[in-house]
Amino acid sequence: MRMPEAMESRPEPKNAVASLARDSTNDAGAGRSTQNDYAVDEAINETRLGSIGVNWQLKAVAPVALVLLAGLMLFVLATVSFRDPERHAVLVVAGAGAIAICAVLIFVLAWFVQRPMVELQEKIARVGEGDLAVSVSFSNRKDEIGQLGRNFNHMVEQLRESREEIELLHRTQMSRAEHFATLGELAAGLAHEIRNPLAGIAGVVEIIGRDLPASSPARAVVKDVRIEIAQINRILTDLLQTARPHPPAIRRSNLNTTVEHAVMLARQQALSRPIEITFTKNPALPEIEHDSDQIHQVLLNLLLNAIQAIEGTGQIRVDIEARGDSAAMIVSDTGRGIPSEHLPNIFRPFYTTKGNGTGLGLSLARRIVEQHHGRIEVTSAVGKGSKFVVSLPFSRAEAQHAAS
Image 1 (cartoon, one colour):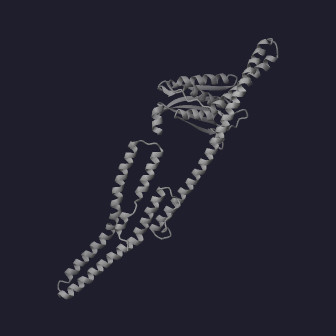
Image 2 (tube, helix red, strand yellow; image 1 turned 90 degrees about the vertical axis):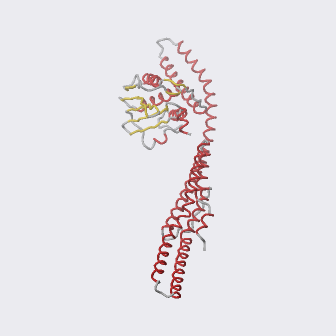
Image 3 (tube, helix red, strand yellow; image 1 turned 90 degrees about the horizontal axis):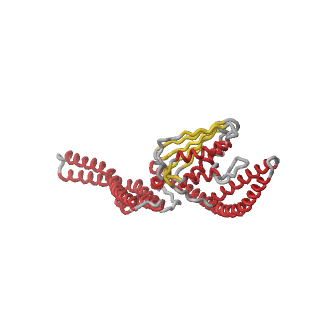
């Protein structure tokens, strides 16, 4: 018969849980203060779990022992009138019965409760060490402990499936990362090779345009060629920025000025169309640490996309709001909107639904915002328009500390 004290020599589940917590903390790069906190919590949990490992048995046996002791005392009182031999015989039988009852109770607890709990503790420790092929043997019992075993086996199975999915996703992402790295090197090389002759072509077209008579119909063709050259140059620039991104030059400046400059350029692009672009400043907004050139590029890209999304008359509204510890730049339009099946993919490189698009604009925008420790979100409804929200923290250092 296994006595209740055996539980004290078994590994407690808190060791596996605490070990797993420490491993996760180390992987995340936490400091020594965090590890000290875990050590304190582990010591507290060890004290609590150690007392629980003993007390549950005492609490189960103590009531029965008290009842039996009270019964023995009643036997003593009831046998006062008995002669000594008869009284001793009754007390011996009663005492032996009480001891037998306590022994049977302890055996039942050890067999039906303690043994499954010890097995569960051992399996939890193995799960904490990374072994997800474990299962408990008492899951076929038709009681609460059996239900606990079934729940544990189901949990481990879900953890195992989740780990397999994560490993598969990791392999897929690594393969895609290598693929995009190769494409990036190829794109950067091609972009450099194309930009050099393109600059020569642009120079020749500029000279031809100056030499043409003012009344020559070829001037219109030269103008179109200049526009196409500028478009090719813009595409090559996006490719270079995608393949070889530059870190942001962070400095504290007024975000209203950055947004206003982007709005002004967007209005120039929409002069020939019945599109109204409104911008509401936020004078109370404090200065923000950001790269004004890169954030200007993000806002201009969103505004040009909004202009292209509007067919006929429409409106584009740009607002700046303070939301907690960050500033939100909101670009909303009344365009055709983005179908829900396209929303999860619009920030992927080279993904586009426009015939003349490269699919790099929103990808670059998201990367720039993330380098600023911000975020970009989008909501859209087909036929009603889209709304992009770009959030930047007031202080990059605080945002970086909060993320870590």
